[in-house]
Image: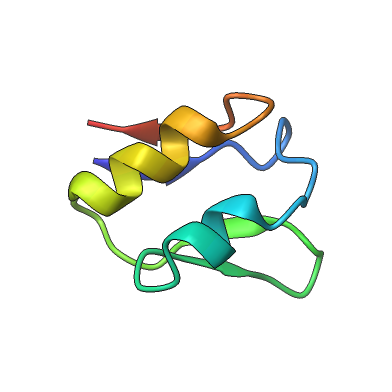
Length: 57
């Protein structure tokens, strides 16, 4: 499962730049998951999230 906690997301864009196939920035300036399943690239982006807003299992 790939999920972004919108309340914790600070909109830094690191996940979208690291893993553009899995994440995009929405109209509110926050990240959103583009896929349901987490691949290795999404897991790496989750690991690098500065506020741990991404769940990638």
